[in-house]
Length: 340
Image (cartoon, rainbow, N blue to C red; front, top):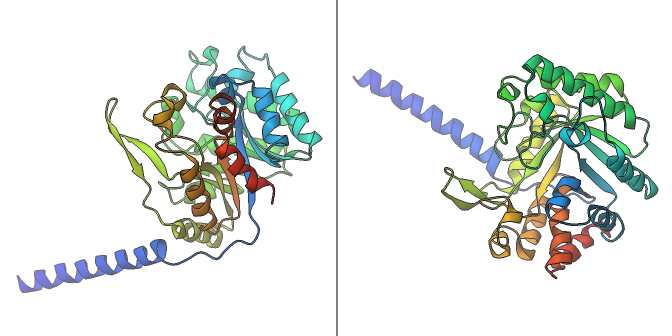
């Protein structure tokens, strides 16, 4: 019995030591200050329209009033190819051309899961197809997009899918079964346009990023600070992230050492996260997770992570707050980031 007790104690001590080392590495310390930070924004025409905004005015205000020079454009497969083989590029052509006029840089998000609910944006004509057929049609669509824009000087990188390994959103059952198809998508984009990097993204809080680091050229991560945690369809609660800023830096350093890949924040929370889609919630509910004070805290937190690139998620909402609610505070605060 004494021998078994000693073995158990040794195992416990080893576990405690390992846990302590992990805690010290990932949760203590201070990241070096970045002297130069690149700030950008995510923009979704679909989101702007959902807020009942003039999306073109919204987009131009982001470029001209905010002075944004780095954009990430979210586009939807079902919007561009609503009918098989019939591509509607008019709106995204306009966005690309307006960015070119201002010498802005664009990260183009393409694939099936490209952000904004329901995350996977699948044309209705694809629903009845088999898994293999769905994948074939998706690759055809992606080829058409890359071929159309690969000669544009404004495209700085392609982002293939949006958090493709993180189970969130309404996607086909096969989508999360393995990363094999994701690798096929990335290989396709690189074959058509070998000169540009491919970004693959992951949850900043709920992943170590190692899988996406093995697939993409750049690792993009999210950064959320206050969200609604859903327990079931009718219950949940608001929660603040407990992760210290050093956690992002330490994980980014591991990715750099192990895979020689850069980590950037591709989605910094700057809009509400509510029990339902926030534009279906009253303003009072929206302000529980995003307001001027929370916006400043999120930016300050980001600056302490040691990362040097951040794309803010919520420019459509700032514009809505300014234009529809008469509250331009966040818009004006964001403008300071892009004037430096």
